[in-house]
Image (tube, rainbow, N blue to C red; front, side):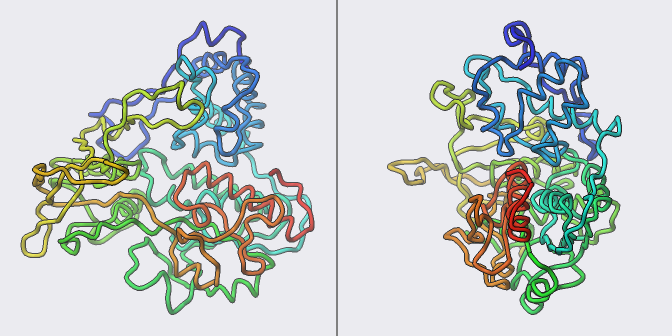
Length: 492
């Protein structure tokens, strides 16, 4: 806890934003972090609640009351020690996690919750500024070799944990830089890639070998015929080769198969998955040359899908200079304020307006696309209809059809599964949703049906949050370590 009466004395302080007119001119982060004094005040608000629901609201089980108290008392160095004990990469979660911990905060029952995410952000930034984040190489090597396939947050967390207990870890990534969706997907204005780069240097200093532009799949099948999944690999390694060279293999790829919208006109030019559009801008921001980049300059953009990926498309389109941006959501508009007595401490359904929405966007709810309309093979618009739920079914409302002009349509309706061709190449059993089948039990957890092959993160659980990826990467590292050594000192 912080100050005994702090939650009664102090109000929640939100992180600020640079003005819209300034921030849409570039792709830099624009969040104005709390000052040390502001963070101290937020730490002071952490009450003596007895049962800190925030711990379980957080998927990595951050020890939140402890680091809040340490910040309140100005002990920043111990605060980062506490934070790092459960979370390998607080600079990722402190920027892009939706903060389910704050929804679970006891103060949130009848007041504004503690600014846990902003405190986490302040702690890790101060730690980097003061040189407290250092490599932690293993004192002794085990002689065991582990391949981690997929260098997103799950793979990075697993690789770091395994290297720190002495295993020789090779981290494989099919694209040219590590980070997964943090690198190619999430815009730079939400997460600058320098945060990933310095963690990559830390991993290498801890003994992790990073191999980028390497796809692990059947050399003949790759990611499957006609795949639109981002793949900048220059080399393909077969699962058999990996299994022969390593004592254990941990698959930590993403759920990269985007949900499609198979309505008439889908084959028109100008209709793309969000994950065709967003990674290209990331790549250009990284200094690479890219021919034929998908851009929204001067175009009427329709984003289909009301979640975070759709919001990222909105922000990127505005930075391109789109003529207009409209975002569709098939579900009805949620309430602006949740019913706290009904939903606390769980994640509530309520209207969420992102910084990208504030930059310019028309939002339409309870709307469904019936067809795309085009001229000479190019999309020029789409026809929609309003929908409603009746008896558990989504029904069209007669007489509500409408035409929207569109030069660029971005499909941001979520992800349905990992790439099946990769799992099939290993011979891994899949669950009903197409994810790798593996449990999360402490004994035998994260192991697939294939000997010495494990799976964690979105490839196992499906589309999820960065904080869940870090949790699964950490837990899977313990499972792999136990498999190799008979026991593990890594935290569960």
